[in-house]
Length: 168
Image 1 (cartoon, rainbow, N blue to C red):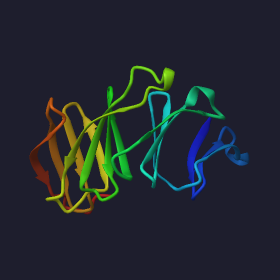
Image 2: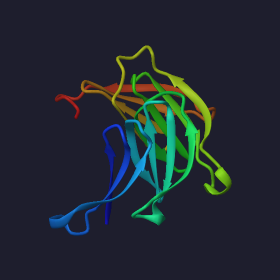
Image 3: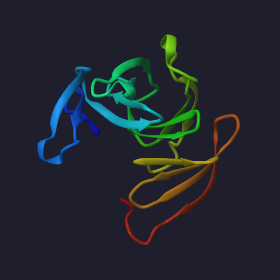
């Protein structure tokens, strides 16, 4: 079993966690910069850097995942959510979501295709995104905002929920 971690300003580190009593670093992928978001989805590891680059790693090659592709992103990422063939990247400002279509495979250098950027500048900003079905849930410490994802890759505002306790 492996864990994938952000290694400060170096890149992605693979740690063997098979035996919790003797964990150890088994691989490093050096990007030379800080990874601001790191997510696993469908056998791949997605890493996003401060310089607005995304990397896709093939986890079938662990403990030394191979970078299948790197691609430019619209903004620095704070969080990422996946829904079937789509990736939703919440900008570090918390006020924009970029939507990408994932390729059927990463063979031949195929990369996620940018579809649209959703402007959330009229909001206080969000720290987390979840996507289920045609709904996107954006959260900050005081609010859960619901958006319907429309077929043209835009968001329609639904209702907001104010929890009785701060959301973490």
